[in-house]
Length: 252
Length: 286
Image (tube, rainbow over all chains, first blue to last red; front, side):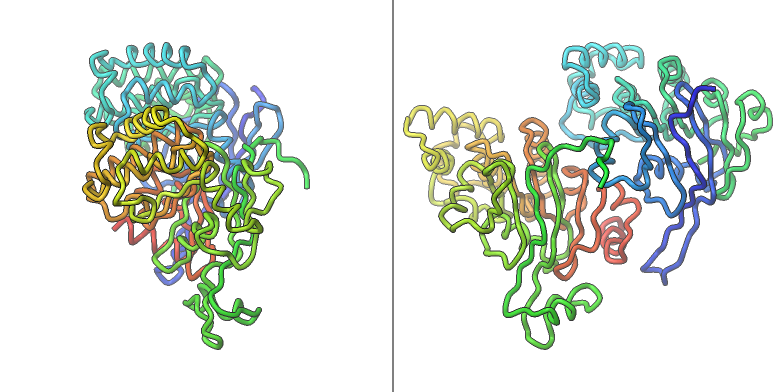
């Protein structure tokens, strides 16, 4: 196996609810695993298992309670994501780590093509290159050219999700976190999105993903990590874990 | 300290230990005020610790939010940086002024006013603070331009027209008195004026508070677009998390004159750490 891009070592997350009598809610406990470049790791487990918590900890949307998240920079140096300063995280999020959520975040009055192009520019592409790649992705995701110049706010849910995928995958960062990226898509558009996502692995991008259906996992994952009640209970090649999974293991 | 392997952009504004008191303050007053005591007012002396030991950096192309309820000290911090209020302690270094070597808080009032011409602009909640309401939109923009040495009438008109166009003020209103403008339109003129001399730093104090929701979202869109295009270093004070979420990547939370949390904006909204931050976010989300 390739040397890992990210090493998650014994991480735990406990929320302290100060305004509800200081109640503590542990969402994740002693989780360890790693991801190498080109690997596509799918997170499985029933609702509340800690899958989204894990994605958010890696992106630093959640703060870590204990453990280490060691990430190998493109310079080859290692950093512990949990210990970075906020400005360092902002810098890291630009080109090294990306997060594609289920929903397109509100960016009113931005046209579809502009939104995707800017995402490419923000990751270091030239404007022309970014625009060209944006057009290719939008076509592949079946977003009609007549929609390219309109504001994203008026798109349908499925269109928004595809635009979000196009923006998230253009000039992809080295680690991509996918949180139910195809949940709102009809079968045909879902196929197209899955095709595009599958190319990430060929491009050497490390992916950690949560999907709402087993079929997406079967199509994309090279490895599956199974979570239950905040613990990692299984981690192995997709072909050996997939047969054991139930449909209830993917509901978020 | 070892060098971080992650390169972060250089600070355009560096604020260290910024503090503002009203009335005589000793160490005891500091120890008797703040979040643990539920007040910024020292019960013994009656003095107020409006802001204590505020620290942050903002880079070009970045916006930092300051959030908190009224009376938390957030606007005080902004006004001390702007020079609208004298500060009591601390330092503010601006990369655009003397390459960041001078603490601008030590400058003379005249020198501080000069910074406001083309180094640092403020957009206030109340347009009457940032504009002369009895003057035309064009005249309001001409004002900072002439202060910066512009003398050619036609060039000033062209620049004013360009700025009003950019801030989406109908050009046929350029020669109307600002008092006759709607709230949203006044705010757009104020933004146009703030940008007149291309300052690298812009401070926004509740820029959309008091506007109707639909008007506020238009002004917010405008500000966000300008932030991205002009590579500004921005500090935005707001009690409104929708504004903070849309404009900033990082923020600080203030309560009773103290910074109780500094955070990535998404982290503040999803996983606030301090009890006060949790209360604010819960209130905003319900």
